[in-house]
Image 1 (cartoon, rainbow, N blue to C red):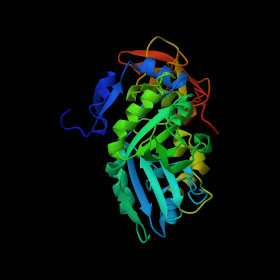
Image 2 (tube, rainbow, N blue to C red):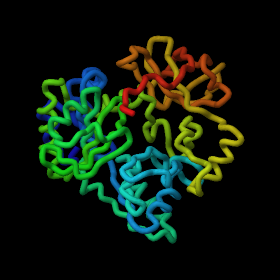
Image 3 (cartoon, rainbow, N blue to C red):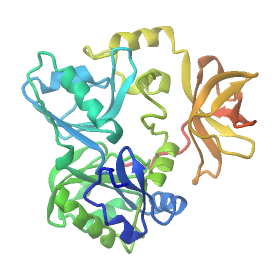
Length: 368
C-alpha cells in the first residue's frame, strides 16, 4: 500500500470504517459498512463517493471544438455551453481507448473526464493526435478532486449546502462556480449508478471538508459513504460499462451495443471508417445480458460455452442486490446472442446453465 497514489481524502476513510485497497494504483475504499448495505443506501436514499482518482484533461484554443470532435465518436459540435456528453474515444481500428465525459464550457474550452486507470494513456493519445490543431492540452488531474453524491435524495441533501437552485442543473448539464458550503465548485448531474445525483469538482484542499459537510448534511436522510464495491454493482445493474471489462482497445462500441454514442453521419473522427464498415457488415460478436439458472456466480473472464464450444467470455457477473438474481454481461459470438439462447458458464471444473436476457437490468431513475 505504501507505493500507491492517494486522493486528498486519504486518512478520512478509516473514520467511517473504510477498507482500503489498491485500485488502478490508488489507495481507495472498497467498502465501508458493506457492499450490500451501501448499494441499498444509494438505491433508496443517498451515498457519497470519493472519485478523485478520475482524470481531468482540458483542451483550449481556437481549434478546440474541431479537435475534440476528431477524437470522439459522439457529436461534440451539437453541444451547447454547459452541456455534458458521454462518448467513446477510439483507436484507428475502432477499439476503445477510453469512455469518458466531455464538458463544454465554450467552443474554445472543453473539459474531458477520463478513467483513472487510463489517464496517462489517454493524455498521451490526445497529445499524439494533436496534429495541426491549434489547441493547448493540459492534464489537470492533480489540481482537481471529485466527489459524487448519488441517490433519490441526493438533491435534497446537497441543496442544504448550496444557495442556488440545484433543480436548474438538468441531467447531463453542469454549472461552474457553484458555492457548496462556501467552497467554489463545478457541479454536474450525470451519475454512474442509475440514480439521480451530482458530481462535485473542487480544489483538492476543499475535498476533506466537503466530504464531512455533505455526510453531516445528509444524516437525517441516511446518507452514507460508499466504496468501489457498491459503485461497481450499481453501475452494472444500470447497464453502464466499465473499461477493462465491457470494453478495451480490441472491442468496439458497436460490439458493446452502444452504437447510440457513435455518430457516423457527422464529420471525421478516429476509427470512423472501421466502425462504418462494421455497422454495414454487422458485428461478429455482441455484448449480451445473461441470467445464471444454476447456483453459482459467473465472474469476469469466465468462458462462455455453447454445445461444447467456447463462444465468448463473461465481462461482469454478480448476484444483483436489487434484483436478487445472478446476472452478468458476456461478449459472445453474434450467432449466439439472441434473447432466450441457452448457454453455459465454465466455472472451474463445472458448467453453470445460463440464458441470454435483456441487458437492461434496471430502469434508471435519473432526472431528465
